[in-house]
Image (cartoon, rainbow, N blue to C red):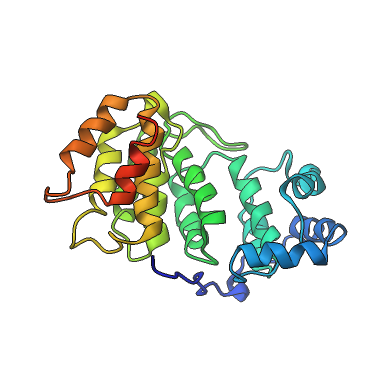
Length: 254
């Protein structure tokens, strides 16, 4: 496994501005900070980020009135993303998880994915990306997601599956988690196969092989035979073999 440090290209001065709502959210978090707990939380994340020291439940309680009825607000999101405390990124993710995104939002989402990157935010952002794949979904204050926009989002996931950034690839692999019978199996196949074989960047990287196994294991709940056939097709001697970890994870409950 490569020891991937979090991306750091994000320039806080490029933020769209200082959001009053974000300032209010930060103040709410500061009021319940726990310095002792923060040490342990930072250690769990390999000391890559600073923390207020707030567990998920009290964090969500502290800001629930701020984000409860908020329409998609990128100023709010980017202001929080620029803050050094990791819980601020979690609040931004909590806000995004309440929204339905479209193709128009995925450029901003990619910037988040590739900034201060680690699994704790990226895996939630994958589910946010997935909402853009669903035609007819409607975010607060938005028009329904059109079939054309959903198709464009699908095409973008295929591009992301071959991105230079490993975390962006992980998003493409995981974006259909929990889709069940609505899973686009051709998309699932293509984003995985883009990350198999010796010529694929990151094909041996833990965060990619684990994501592939996770995506297959999740879909196996709906269509175990499809997953069994996929695993059999991508056997160790095939042109595009699954990594051992991917294979193990895919078959975990079969």
